[in-house]
Image (cartoon, rainbow, N blue to C red; front, side):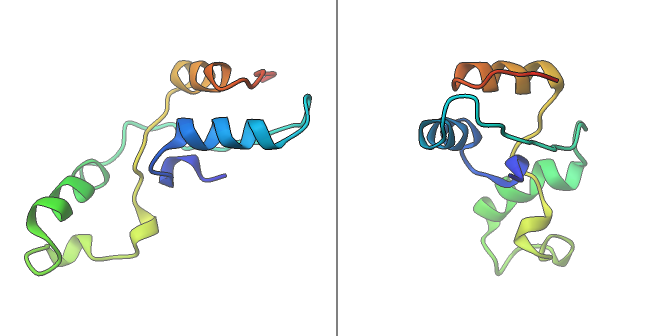
Length: 88
């Protein structure tokens, strides 16, 4: 799962947890970064300016930017809150 690209990561984790058997593994690999200024501003700017007024720098593939950023404590807490057991 590319969790950083999902609009509602908590909701997705909860839905997946309900669909799998107890003890089923979930493997996540998310970047641990504060995020670039481009990633942090792209979505709000697109909503504010719309496509016509949007700077060409930001017009690359929609999937190239992150909607969420995770540090280890936040990711562990979100997994625990949605019913997952963290083993690493």
